Length: 226
Length: 226
DNA sequence: ACAAGATACTTGATGCATCTTTTTTGACGT
DNA sequence: ACGTCAAAAAAGATGCATCAAGTATCTTGT
Image (tube, rainbow over all chains, first blue to last red):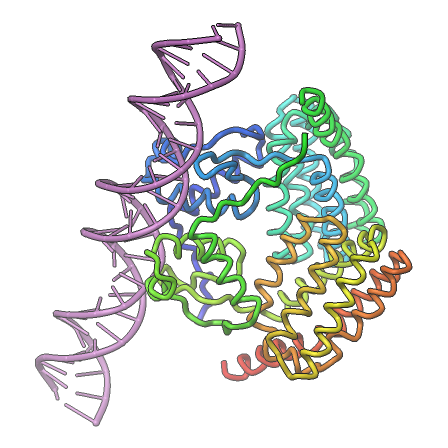
């Protein structure tokens, strides 16, 4: 008897959740933006229940916060918290890169190279949205190649929190955002785990610099105002 | 102007979620146990809505799964998935221990030593529940001392998934479960980050051995049946 | 006695009404 | 202009009714 993939039934709340996740990761929300359940319900054409469900899940992910019982907003991100997320990413994406380097096939490498080419093109075209998406796609390929689903989930959650903060800063760094991706691919080809890990760490620390600067700058501005 | 902690207002779904989390972490559920929203609503004395909300959050944490659209169960844990969780814990708790070693005060150390003493006593008394809780308390102290809230959240989620699988295996290992905690405390006293990291890694790998054996054994049994 | 089909029951998803509290708004006084 | 305050509007939490789909039970024919 053939195996059938357990087909994922979709409930409305999952659809809404996925849509909001996409929006978050694409930077289509700004930190502090207010969400209203009834408004979203109208936009999605559903009742409020699936929206509430999705928002509850995002709140659980700490991507949105309840500033007060009736005030739902896109979560802010302090500099300290961003630094923590970065430190965690260094450890976890390092693990993903190491593992991926051990098991990567040439097909895997080709997918990565294809993403890189498209990303290069998107940057050349000045297409910020596509550039951000392809950058994320590259990062998520590593845990996928490595066969680490739990890791993928954790990283997705971290990106949900970073999403609203990277949109503006992304192209500020220009091609720097993907410069470090090339040595990752080279390391995977050679099954060189330490090199893969070091390259992805460089990417996170150096490529993420403009984002950190922007958050730090925003905090400083806020401090002066107070 | 002094900082005020954003006081957490409590909604019912948070109360239910916290209660279910506790139950999960204490191993009071078995993998595969079925949850029924209406039953839980009766037990908690609420309507079904807050229960649904809490269950949705736990599903988002991947602590429970929807086997089919109307069949909510405590999630299983494959050997591969457990190994992945362990690898992630090694990286993240390593980071927590390193950071904690740099900033730990003598007050922090005293708290850890107190937990260790009580844990020793619980094991001597054969009090499995208390032993498990204190073991967890020790592990969660490290990211707290280190001041890493995001890390704490991630680890809590991982423990939610491990909870139903550690109950039986815990005392099987006897004192082995906390043997490696002592060198962690010693390393924190000396502000010796590498030693702290190594000690906690030993604890995760060696202390977690009986859990892995149990999961592997369970899978083997299941494979034979098929 | 047993299997297949029909029936009744369970159960989560969805929608919606209501309640309480918050937020908004606008008038008012300083 | 600006801050204050009160009334009105808004908004999330909670509870509940209904629906559709799955499960268990019962019936029925062999």
